[in-house]
Length: 220
Image 1 (spheres, one colour):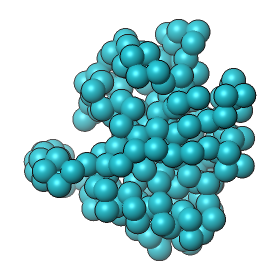
Image 2: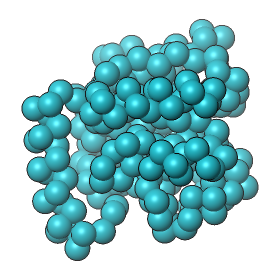
Image 3: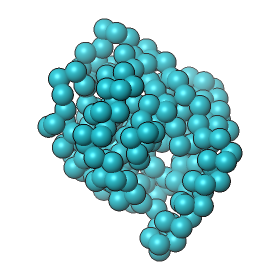
C-alpha cells in the first residue's frame, strides 16, 4: 500500500490546496493512505478525516515547530503547543498516543539538527522528504540506517502536483491507522522518492527566504 505521510492543507499558513484536491491527487497517483500534518494545528487533519472517501486511510497529525526545528506528530488528534523543547514536544506527542518523527533533518530553515535527532527519543526519522534537497535526504537516510531507526517518507506537499513525490510503502495487510503505526515502529515499511533538483532548490530557497522575512524572521 502506497502512502504519503506528510501533506498540508489550506489550514497551514503557507499552503492553499483544498481537501478535495488532495483526494483527487491521491486517487490519481494510487495512494491509499495519507497523513495530514498541518503546521501547529489539527484542524486540517480533522476536516480531512471527516470528509475522506472509504478507500483512503487518513492518519491524523501535526507538524510541530519545536525550539530546535520541526517535528511530525503522527496519529495525534489534539493540539500540541509550538515552541517547546524537543524532549518536551516528544513527551507531549507520546502522551497524546502518537509517534514522534524527526521531520526533514538537515533542512537549513526548519529541519532538526543531527545532534538533536541523536540525543532525543524519536520513534522514526523522515528519511525522504519531497521538498528536501537530495543531499539532505541522503544524510537523513544514512542517519536512520546508522542509528537503526524506523523510517518514513512524505512529499511535504503544499500543492496537489507534489503529492506522491515521496512515498512510504506499507504491507498490503495494513488496513487501519493503528496498523500503519505498528508497521512504522516495527520497520515493516519501505521508503521511495528522491528530493528537489538544484534548480528547484534555488527557487524554493528564494521563496522561503521571502516568506521568512515577511513573518518577521520567525519559523512557522
